[in-house]
Amino acid sequence: SYQYFADKCKEFGLGDYLNRDKSVIYSDRGKGVPTFCNAFPKAAALNCFFHLLKNVRKHCRKNHARGRWTDTTAWAMQTAETRTEYEEALAHLHGQCEEAADYLDRLDHAKTFHYAISTTHSCVGVKTNNLVEQVNGAWNTLREEAPYRLNKALLTWLGTCLHNRQHMSAGWMNRVPA
Image (cartoon, rainbow, N blue to C red; front, side, top):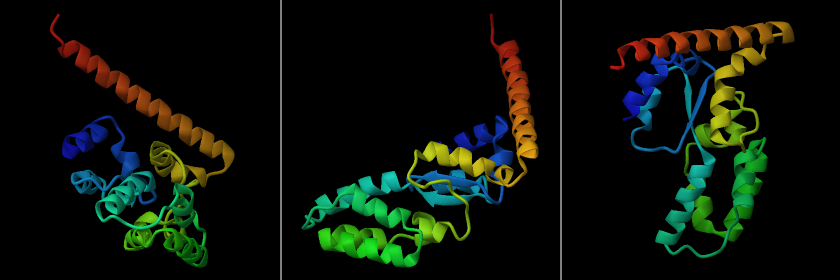
């Protein structure tokens, strides 16, 4: 379950990093995702655009939508730097497939589209693997440090994580029957 996964993240020491003001948790909007996100209330829960595109395609097939659209056109909406660029990309998608454009435009912009997300969160290129964004979200505060402090913070963080995991693993090994 998502609660179990959240508990395991905390147990492995990831809770401190997932529950920061600038942390970002990207998800596919699955039913259990709010449970996971509620375990880390300081993090922003944002939508994974890759998964949304799958949903749009499914929606368009189900509703027998007219027109053909491309991922490139939809990604132009997602990666737009300004509201104006977003509106231009939306108009382009609307010209290809009204149903797809309307579906995407109805989404919460502050959780989906870069122009709106970037006003509150620092995301390094939103057209990446969502796993990368998870790590970027955990390290956002560290990126603001000067290079030497950044390196020290990263090494301290990694060392602490490895130390804690080693002790946790040793504890597990001691509990395993021979």
